Each structure stands twice: as C-alpha cells, then as structure tokens.
Length: 341
Image (cartoon, rainbow, N blue to C red; front, side, top):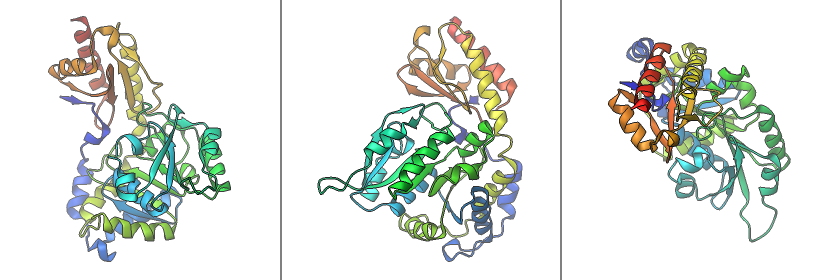
C-alpha cells in the first residue's frame, strides 16, 4: 500500500528509533529533561527566537499561542480556509473564548488592505483585535507558500496597531525548501511560530512553538493547564532532534516527487490539477473522469494507493519520506488504469 494521505503517516527513521532508545531523560515539568531542553534550544536557534517549547501537536501549539496572546472576548483575524479555523474543532472559541474573523485569501494569502480594514476600532460594541494568524505553507490551498512580501506587509500593519502575529508554520520547513528562504527569516516576521516535527520532518510525535522568553514562560503554564506537561519526554524529543539535524534538507525530494505526480496526472484524460504545486501537496479534480472524490478514493484503495478527499470532486495527495520516484511512477500507472476502466 502506497500511503499518500498525509505526511503525518511518515514513519520514523532508524536513527530516530535509536535516538529514542538511547535518550537521556528527566522530568520535563521540572525542566530537567536534557533531551527536551536541547531540542527546544536548537529549535529556538534555528528560528531566531529567544525560546521554544515542545508541545504534543500542531493544534496544541496553535491553541497555546492563542491562549497566551489573547484575552477572552478578543477577535482573531485569519484567512477563511486556515487550519486554525477549519480543522481545530473551534478550540479558539471553546478554550480561549475568542472569535475568529475570517478573510478571503488568494492561495492562502490575505490581502493586506483587507487585514487593515478588519482591525477593530475603539468602540464599545466591538471586540478587540487580539491576534493576526498566518499559515505557511497553506494546507487547504494545496501546500501554497505564503509570499514573504505578503507576510512583511501584514506584519507591518499589525505592528503599527500593536497586534501580535502568530504563524501556523506546521510545514514551514517545506516553505523554506521550496523558496530557499531560511525559516528564521519567516519567523522574524512573527511574534510566535508553530511548526510540526511529525509531518515531513518525520518525527513520530510533537511540535514546537517559539517566541520571546516572556511568551514561552506564559505558554509553558498554558501547556500545563492543557495537560501537556510531560515527564520523561526526552524519549519523544530525541527523534525531533534527529528531524532537525537530518531531515530538513531532504524535503526537496518530496517537492520533486509531488511535481512528478502532478505532471503525470495532468496528462491523464479526465483528471485536472487544481493547485499550483509548490511543495508536497497535489490536489486533483476527478469530476470529468466520472468520479466523486469518495468513489475515486475507494477504487484507488483497491489498487493499493491511499489518499484523502478534499472536496466533493477533489482528492489530496501528499508526498513524504520514504515515498520514492519509483513509488510515484507506480501510483501514476494505477491511476491511469483506474481512469481507463
């Protein structure tokens, strides 16, 4: 079975498994796990931030950031198809007591003038704008890279109004691999950033949030409140260290395989590529081939390939380690046979 549902299905490398086995551990709630501490220090260094915090997932990291930045009754500005809005169970409202204000985007990028217009003025009837959230790469936009100039302009607007900016950078290293722009340059445009160790970087568990020392101090308490205070967590942090040291450069392979997949599918009659493939996500429309997304996926599963629905006639494929070019060729053959039938 070739699993292209998500890069979250990436299996840990042998080096990660060995690192977990040999990890030096302590009680992280007391700040005594040396492996956790090394991971947080390394992540902060790579992002150019003062401090970092290991969290159990990207969703937990994003929600901790919101809880740390905002007060109940605040409003958050974000793009209408952001992961924070679509896929985190309304946690910002359930946990932080804040409401989202969504704006349309082009391939995940909000128009800075729309952002400026959405910032609340002083009025007893209005909530206060407590946070602006960006997403890079943008999942729902097919792994689109948020242009750094767009980020710069929005951040400048935010700073003029003294509003913090949080970056959901779950796949930030994919953006860096695609553009050649280092992750610290992206992170410099934000007050806090979250990235996943457990997607393309291949670690089995965890994400990182980073920001100022004061931000991370407050975030650590919110992590504890959410049940994220782990004990001998070095066992799961050690693979994260391997991910940062050994897995960031190979993300270009995933991008090349995604481009190979998209190019092959574009030559199959009845299938259309919906997104500009910049990173490791390919969106395919199946309508002209006579399939709904669910029908296509069920038939494809019988051929030994897994993907996920992303709309009534849209299927998402995600390339990741250790998917190879040979695997992609195999997938293309199976898709062609399926459409031929």
